Length: 281
Ligand code: PXL
Image (cartoon, rainbow, N blue to C red; front, side, top):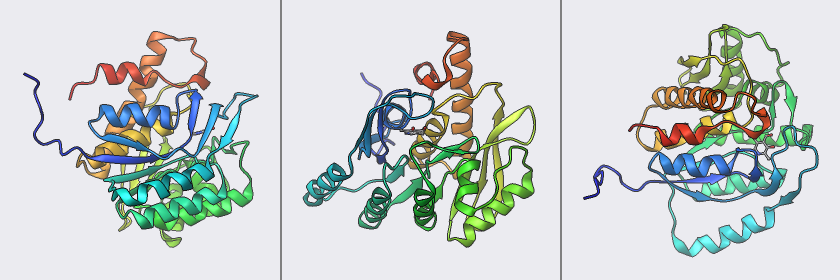
């Protein structure tokens, strides 16, 4: 007999990201991870790309803004409800307005990753106008999950590589002055040994969800972090618990990549599949 978990209430997440066909990020990460954590994953795709934009030269890019509008109209009579909305890569400034209307039409937990930059640099497809527009999501996210580059861009703070706790506190108070509620900063590292997330609650309280630092940088780890975090929040974990599980999951995925393919090209992402396959509940 199948062992059905009676506690599973068949929760669902609406994931609003692009489909990058190759490169393990956005929906190709959110869909398998959220499902494997026992949560249905519904999709609102923002764009269709041959690969993601980080390190691939000639990629195709189909903007799905109009199709997003059609999908939302088709959903209207269905009376859908979502246990969370998890958004990431928005292809155009107009899609940020669509995101805002989805969040107001479907009141629920919103987890927003202001995807636009990493390692001190804006992704090639975005410009300063897009950065200004992205600032509008800060007050509508229940949980905002920027990396440090994105947090600096949102707050007009010069980016730096070496950071300390004061720097995180300053970024957090700037974001909260803009209306941010809870913030989970990703890619936070104060020492050679640790990397993880800084979790800042609405009341300004800070805690850290650290894991073992790995030497190499891989693409797509922010989306893996966000997917695990959102699924575990829907599963009833606290923000710090969910952030710790997500940080550990990312580190395990990097370790699995190095163990199975030490020469892996970093732009193809990490082997999260083997971590999912070996996960014990
Ligand atoms: O992982 C973030 C991401 C998502 N989607 C696309 C990207 C990136 C980062 O480069 O290019 C298309």
